[in-house]
Image (cartoon, rainbow, N blue to C red):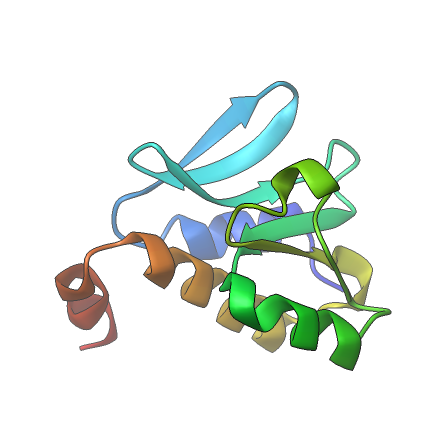
Length: 112
């Protein structure tokens, strides 16, 4: 199980990433684009994810992943239950969500 603090430590290392508290919810952004957000009770993490792949992700592991609320289905977004994630999986999801919103050269410099 991972916590918001675990995610915070990772997100702090990602270039251009910043943490914000918006309507009592922790969110991480690059510029104005949110790439991670937590439910108010911090049990669910929403993250940037390709729309065309999210149905397969949720279908593959429905106990771990869920679709966002209907009002957010228009966005590149999916959600995960924090209690079902391990450290390695959280790292992959967070970095990939961040990668979706930064310029390619920023990501290239990060992995170099």
